[in-house]
Amino acid sequence: MRTTQDALLKIAKDTAEKAFVPNPNVTAAFLVGSMLSDNPFMGNATDIDLLVIYKGEPPREREVLKISNEIHVDIRYEPAAAYAQPRELRGDPWRGYNMWDPHLLHQKGRFFEYTQSIVRSQFDDPANRLKRAYAFSAPARSAWTEMQLDAPRAQPVRLLNAAANAANTVAVLSGSPLPERRLLAEFPERAARLENPDLVRGLLDIFAGQVTVDFVNEWLPAWEAALNACGHRPADTSIHIARLGYYKNAIQVLLQSDFPLAAIWPMLCTWALAAESEAFGPEHGKAWSAALKQLGMDPGGMSARLEALDHFLDTLEETLEQIAAHS
Image 1: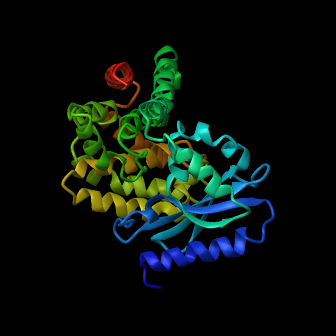
Image 2: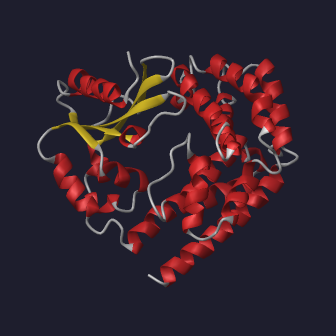
Image 3: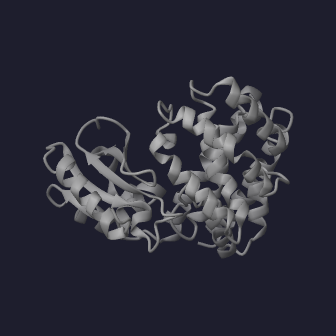
């Protein structure tokens, strides 16, 4: 199969036709995510993101279907009740943007037209932009507080989740949330829109310190071995084995970009998730521990990383206060 955007769109339509149209409990199904962009591929790899709105309790939260080593279908199920108040979605960064301009594959009745028309109304009002930003900054600050007060909770995966929320606080002030593979690569542009390029260094200080791009090249084999081991029975669907090529190709593309250090983000986030898996053995743990020490994310360096997160969040909170005062 030639991997083109049109070919992948056909897969999305066929999946909806076979799996969702016959199901009386499926209210709607949409194509969302990178497939709606001009270039969804990174190194010839991408995913087909489907959002399924389900009447009642969905059968699962997420499902990954492998198409090839570079392509997979990533299906997220959400209850229709989560979309029952469309006005509230204006302040929801993920669901709000999902309804802004998805590709409709299937619906019952006029669910989509009704929901989208209300979501789009006043969506870009300053008050709604701030709600979407606070939807990220609040959990980031809560995570910092919990890690600061309870050192055992200051784990890499928790720190990285807080950093992602902090980064997306910036992102949603001028657009949609940043996708995982491209988060660090696209963050500088969002920081520039706030006329604060120092935010890039501030974000890196949370999880990378003074580490250079050599870190990625040095630890890439150990990262791949860990994901290979943990991806067959993943505790988190994000590191499903079908997604290995999706991440590896992205890392290799980012290493050749104008901002090669951006490759560290998808590598670290997935490696940290693998470290939470039961299949993560001692042979994987040794490399992971050494990498964390190099990053300054080991127990001895975590206090400095938390201090960097605190400083970054302070800057964001001041920014949000200024925006609120002038809106």
